[in-house]
Image 1 (spheres, rainbow, N blue to C red):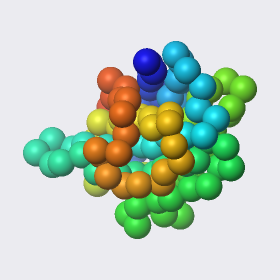
Image 2 (cartoon, helix red, strand yellow):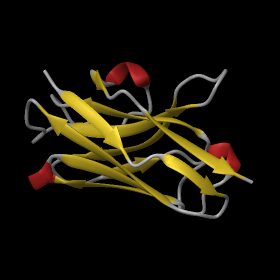
Image 3 (cartoon, rainbow, N blue to C red):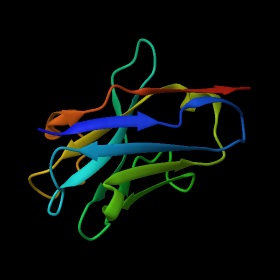
Image 4 (cartoon, helix red, strand yellow):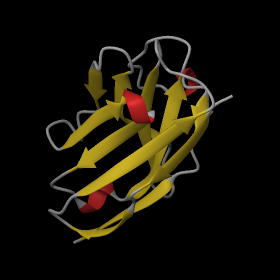
Length: 125
């Protein structure tokens, strides 16, 4: 089993920055991947970014590429999402997800076996 705990959400003005963290516990991720998704009210959960745990290869949604950066700290079993130049349309609950068994950069919800509880990010205009 894997437990994921997100932190770092909050309220920020447009153009500002936030850094989300996701601490993983329960098993190691040597060959797996982690990702961030988000869900705004009335919308489906959508892909934001993913990272391979071993090599650090990344994938981003077009809507965040160039503004957001996903990274990981293997020693701390933590993945981060640095969000810069935030826009009101980035407002959502952000979820951390994990696929500990194999490498993937997939943008699909069904690929990831474990999920955190979510952290709210609100960007005011």
